[in-house]
Image (cartoon, one colour):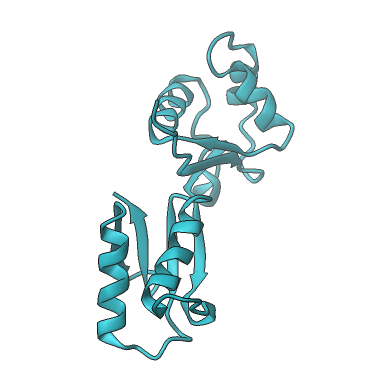
Length: 157
């Protein structure tokens, strides 16, 4: 059986006062009943992509899904889990700097669905960067540039 990847996180948007939605969610008996109780206790849910889609589909069908103000429209927030890897802080052991950095990215991807690659502390060596990207690619990781973040991001492919 393949290991599940919990790439998303759900939590309550405290600024959205959706009493009608919460009443309907608490009255629900079914697959999300325990999740609703956990969210109401302030817990965060870790979700696979399929579970995220199912939760959103269910949540949107309940009355009162979008009562909040523009900045807090819905009672739940679901975000992609992302960690930052400081590539400049990675020290090579018996391997190249590129492989050591690749291993640090892989370790980070065990905790989250994507990793922001902080390249500020690196010397910008193109050959080293290419070696790391190839190392990650052979392990099923894609590296793309995130223009909003201003840094490259590694994602499981």
